[in-house]
Length: 459
Ligand code: GLU
Image 1: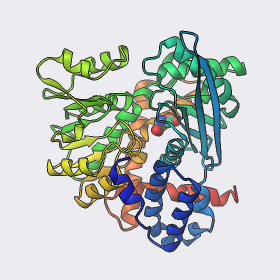
Image 2: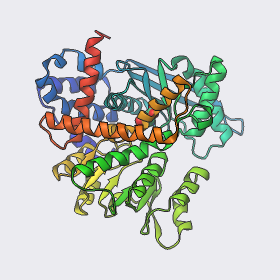
Image 3: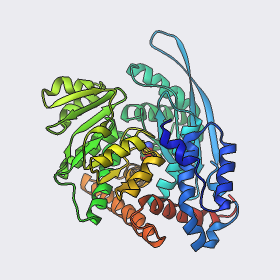
Image 4: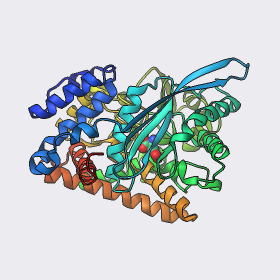
């Protein structure tokens, strides 16, 4: 765990009640640093809203928000290509359904554990509330690693995973989508098994489906595109645009690729992409067709990009993109990838804006440094909400059996990102923390969630 994580999470919170609540949460969720960190960040934002709106300080309300409604853990047995039996662990944390059915992705990654799923489900609940749409929050996945597995192995794994998970899903109950390690291929296998078991064409039960069988235009692009649209709004407030700005991006998955695409479309000079082995720096600007060929078609490693690109690009094994001088940084890989040390380097190079394409990629220590230096910082639950918002557009099309043209979906994605930006900005201002999108996002989401939960009684 990067050092920044511990420093901030051990700090006390404003007011004895929030402090007590956090101590209890840590005691009841031991060994789950990511969940504790995500909860701490939200609790640290709430004091002004609890003071201004005493009706939301109802005893037991925050305690309920911090406790998942349901946590499901299950065995996923499957057989690899050599006939060897394998066992993985599956998770689905149904965090909060006050605003709609549980909604959130599935992550397949060897590091996944219950604490990480809970952090993701908690973040998702706030993110989804912030969209203003009718979705609750949930998250799931497995410690299975699809990398290096054949298509047939991935299919058998997904079928086994869904054989257990299907009983908990439904378009009015719980609607998964993708996340790290779960893309179009995995959603296809999962949907096929769901349909086979239930004998129902319930397309609204999973999002991120293929375009020919119930998927929406732009769902694949939406998280990365939305992150850059949110970034453009933050820059706009400061009288700037993306045109001509240097941008560094971490990651090379779905979010990173489409963040690069949208940033380039808006005139930015995107210098980097990365994977767990290192990063590539391309002085001429990233060649997107080459990156897509390597990552999406060949499912290869980022070092191949430098091998094929020629002299403008070099591969830095084990390095971090945050060492590259930039105007804008877009962490699009995974949690806690941008720590206080990286933030210090970015600041020394004069970074102006950071927007999170991944979920909680910036440690609390780094966020603190960026805020203190006046950098525009867009937290993931606001900046990357375009993905889940477009999942809702997919659900709307499924419910009405319609297929919207690309322009219609694109216009709705732009509108939702502008609305989320406005909500965060205006809320931060209203509660005395102007320009702080973290408090703005947390308070706005909390107000909506709390109001819904109170109105529905003790559930
Ligand atoms: N995993 C994505 C997220 O972090 C998408 C969730 C969804 O579309 O349900 O928001």
